[in-house]
Image 1: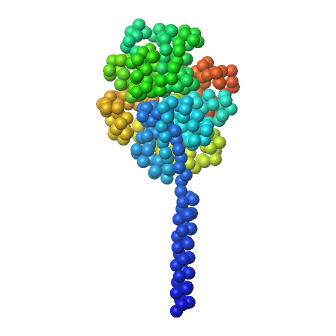
Image 2: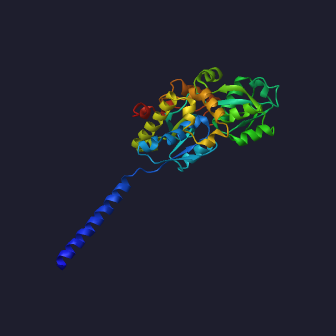
Image 3: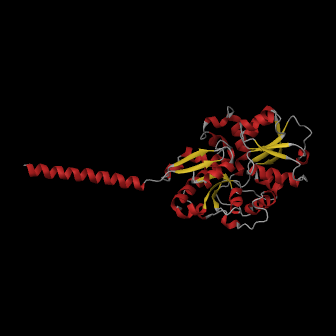
Length: 339
């Protein structure tokens, strides 16, 4: 009898051990959390990040993705280089700028083919009718070394202004940008939706240069300007192709959702606080700017040269450097995306 009890006790312990081992194996096979820093996820230019989360596409791919928020794209870039995050939803031009510093990162999903930005001018300065009229003025950008800073300096140069004839200062976006305009710390500035609509609605600012559509971007910059993207360090991409492919699958599904649904339908999937108390205005702004997004995450062919032209003139890092644009993005994952 005792031997029988001993046998069943041993059998029971083996069963427990087997369950524990199975659990341990399952945990070891579970997806590692992927952290992605977004350069202001309430901005409509970066809408695909939160929308993908809301639609449940990350989970459908078996991914555990955490989105972190950072007001300025240049700071998000620093988080990536420090190894604090696996990827950044930010402007593609960081991939070009970083190569000049010997750092290789690449856009793996291209969200947009236009910046989605506008240059606003304060209603307190009605004399400003063109970019050339900003001579001697102070303009707001999200951060020094940011995409908004490079674009501002480029358009100033195209308008005939010389270096030093305008001053750019970092004012972030949203409430801090609006406060800087209200306090006359800046006379104009580059920002995104929903900040644009908020200031136009109150009559505190008007649009001087519009970069929210491909057509207007070509007119202002001479070509498409691939902007919002998911970019990651090239070495990490090469070592984690399965995870990157799943991310591409999720984001391409989101871009197709944007392309096949109305602004109102998209807005319903977004966090309510993104409306900033004006859902109608949020939807209207999205209707106006929805065309900036690519339908499939593929980099537009004429985009990288336009970005390089801008940075070659105003990025101290890029000026005079030889840049291999083919290493700043990849279409491998979006072209293989399953949806």
